[in-house]
Structures are given as structure tokens and as C-alpha cells.
Image (cartoon, rainbow, N blue to C red; front, side, top):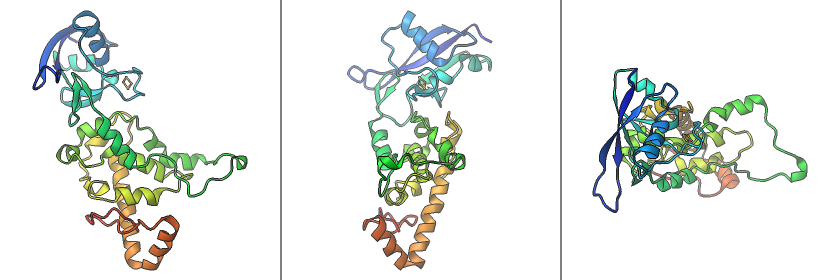
Length: 273
Ligand code: FES
């Protein structure tokens, strides 16, 4: 393992530069150091102006996402030693791909948050029971149905890995769709029709071409690609059902609202069966 590693870090101050540049810093490689430790070391001892985002330092808050040697990674969960061990004595650190840069390694996530809202990632009930009736109970099996998708920490690594996000900024993206499935599969939720109406769309589930990079880079093993394929099956089933049983569609509209219509692939329609 190398004693030192050279970190090439993207620097960008939009007020003073037209495009990002790279600056190099040499840091010691300690066995227990992650990329975030190296950035903190640089900020403390070499350049106090280096700007990056972090909070928990334990892979929970999702705020330290950045590109490390071209791969989306959590800086607090990426060990320096794994790069030095491979004989690489240089490490390139850049802001997450496909996001506007605020400064250095900090990206603007406002558009991502807007996409999350479209997926309605909260419990929707057609009718609430009174507080006096107690909580909504679930069996361990019902919890298992959605638990994997609930592990998402909104770190946006999957967006930086997704070529569809790069080609089509309007694509709602992997994390939002996986979160929609998290609530669709929750036994307490009654909002799946509402979400389907918003997400069975070329910029929603039908935009995904199943490259699978989102699942590969997810630090919490959420498997957004799997969630989206499941969601496509559900949407296709509802579309077929609306063709075969148009009267059933009317019953569903009466139950869930009149803005529901076709959810078929490539229909471009934001209404569902
Ligand atoms: Fe919270 Fe890395 S600092 S996930």
C-alpha cells in the first residue's frame, strides 16, 4: 500500500471561473481513512477553501456523494486504501455527474427534490381511521415486501450513474421510482393508483431502458432497476385490464378519481386505468 496518494480534486467557483479545473493535493494513506477523511485533512492543513458536503460520516445522510475515479461513491464509505492497494497513487474526485455545480464538489439537488415529490413518497390513505382505533399494524412479511426500497438515503448516486438521466433531464430517475414502489408495496398505503397516474409516462417508468447502473452503484442495495421493472409490469397489467374491462376502469375512476386513464407504454398519457 502506498504511503501517500495524490488527490486531483475538481475546483469550481462559478463567480470567477467559466469551467472547473483540477488541483492536486498529496495526503497520507491511513488504513482506516476514507475519501472524506482525506478531504477533511486537505481542508484542515492545505486549503481551507475546498468545498464539499457531508454530515453523518456513516453512510446514512446521503450528502457526501461524489465521483471517485469516475464512479459515483459516498466519500464517507470509500476507503483510500482500496485505491492505493491497486497501485493507483492518484485519485480523481469530482462532483456528481449530471447535476449543476454550486461550488467545487457541491451540487444543486433542487431538481432532484422536485422529481421526488412527483413520486408522492408518503403514505396516502383514501380514508383515515380515527386515532382511537390505534395504529396500522403490519406483519413481518408485509414489512419485508417494501423494506429493501425503504433503505434509500437519497444520495443521488443512482442519478449520476444513469445514462438516461444524462440524456433526458426530464426523466424522473431511479431513486424517485424506487421510492414510489416502497409506498406502493406498503400494506398501509392506498395511493398506488395516484402514483401510477403520475409515473406511467415516458419520463417516468417507461423512460428506463434497464441499463442497471443505478442498482450497481447503490450503496444501500436498494435495487432501483428491479423496482422499476416491477412497476412496468404493474402498469402493463393495468393497461391491459383497462382494455379488456373498460367498465372496471369506470369503477376504478369512481373510486380513485376521474384523472385516471391509460398507463400503456409509450402512450405519453399521464392518466391511468
Ligand atoms: Fe452522510 Fe456520507 S456523510 S452519507
